[in-house]
Length: 282
Image 1 (cartoon, rainbow, N blue to C red):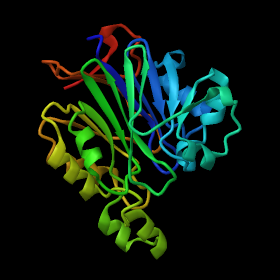
Image 2 (cartoon, rainbow, N blue to C red):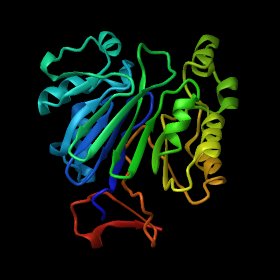
Image 3 (cartoon, one colour):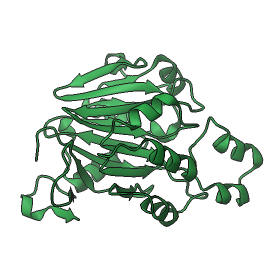
Image 4 (cartoon, rainbow, N blue to C red):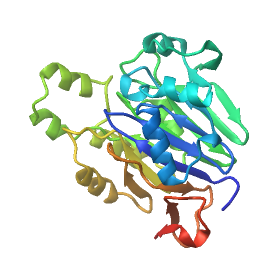
């Protein structure tokens, strides 16, 4: 594996909790920690990922499904928490101030050879941000909780070799479902979440030719269907591997490279096992 490869996994994705891992051989970051510290530990252990590699937590916004595990995890592992002032006010964390790092729009933060960039997004929160993580020429985006597609999101999406992209709801399922009207408007009104159709349009309009993986994220339990969205995107995948991130369990670890391997992609449950034990998905 190239030293610029990135290893990515969704530890959980949905309104019950969100946590995304991006790292290389020696460093890693977590984007959000919306499940408990214990669950993060268990899921990373099953994947063979080490919390000793995690250098920081980055918080996208203050909604509970993105921050539930932050305080315990940060205290236990003495992890710096990168968060905007507005988001911090909304979180009301019981956290040692020495662990808090100010996050600003368009800021860049480096941990060894990992570079994390933050940029604002559209969502009904105080100061919501999306992130890209890069190592050398390899770039991964974490793009969830999006009320709408903006020019900045489109621009960053075009630069990614892989992305976690929200596909929250099927429009027909939401419209015909039992949610109250105000909640339906909150979800679909331009400040809430992206529909399958909106996410697909972003993919079709701005996917770079080198995007190897797309992890569809933050699916609604009531207003979406994993098989439906998988089939929808696979019809247009054109060589991009489509993975639906679960709200119940972690995904496999996927290897992202700026140079596509000649013989398919590699993913695994335990990246510290010998190479012949890796699960090869072709």
